[in-house]
Image (cartoon, rainbow, N blue to C red; front, side):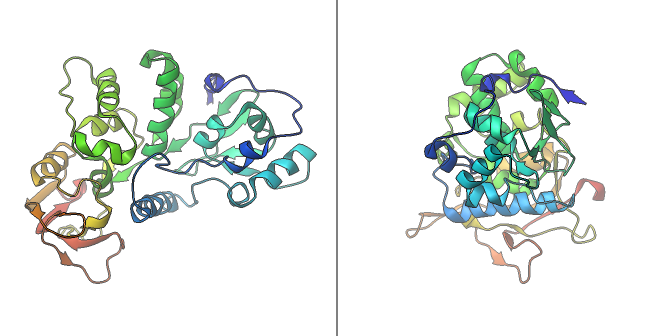
Length: 310
């Protein structure tokens, strides 16, 4: 299927461009959470999620290594018409590039998708439906809304793309947070709540804690899940406190999230204040030896089960 004219907001594409500025080339690839205050460990955890999720479909999501390591040389090769394999380009990197760079990339690229489905760009149109990490999908949507602040103006983008599935524990580690922690993601709480209300309308109960979640529930491809790694005996591994954005998150918030997503849970925790380090510890936790996911490596006295085990 074809997603027509979904890219026109980025500007008209110039024709026959053979030169480009060094600034445009060097700043080409857009990294996740680029404007955030997240630690490198938190960012690396998100990269791990992306790699893990896309690997389930048989590919590696992201921008081509040639664009990451030698963007200027790669674009020059495109300008010269050199024979080369197609470049894999994330939709955000393509849309956020300047018109001249878009022209060059469009000569020989495929658009990355978390579900590894082929997506191409031809004559100003996307052929196929890319599945994007939620962080990237939201970043593009917010950019569109800054240009035209009505959701109805961007329905082609919303119909033509989806946010990738995500383990519930990854989601709450990054996206369940109170208003004071939005700045860690480089976001404004009022803006995110306003976008959530665009999706759910006046009857929706939009709060600081659930605004990201409400947006995700309207743009996802396969939704939030818990992988069954323990034959329905209950999965205990949860995110390391070092990657949880809101380290003082209340169990009641996470429990409500699990409940709404149809994920059963037993147990609870309470945040514990400490006088060193970051000042907070999510809860007393027990390390899990040899976890399947290295970032889900502690037990906080809570057991969860995937939906198919209900």
